Image (cartoon, rainbow, N blue to C red; front, side, top):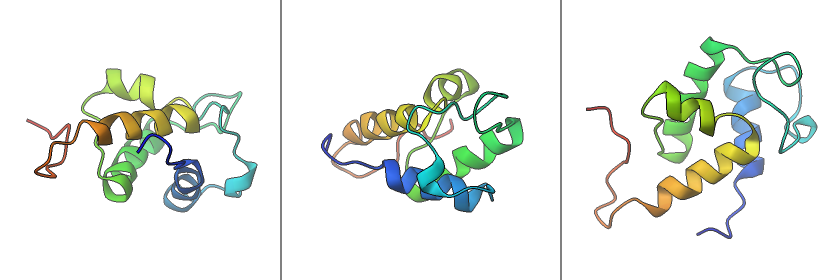
Length: 99
């Protein structure tokens, strides 16, 4: 599954679910999502992004520490989703479920 490129879907999810005033093709794979030198997302956007990832890709983000690493760029989200999908066991249960 590591050969799957989810970046276009991630960008579409960002634009649609966060109501960004940009198009998916204008979002660079390594563009910072948070802060003034990137898309400028804030903490509310981060919560929306986590919910969107769960709905769209079936992958949760368990805490803010993980979110801080996984949600930096489209590339880090992509890698995180693929990593977590590979860890889903054969029962198909969601991973990183809240305790």
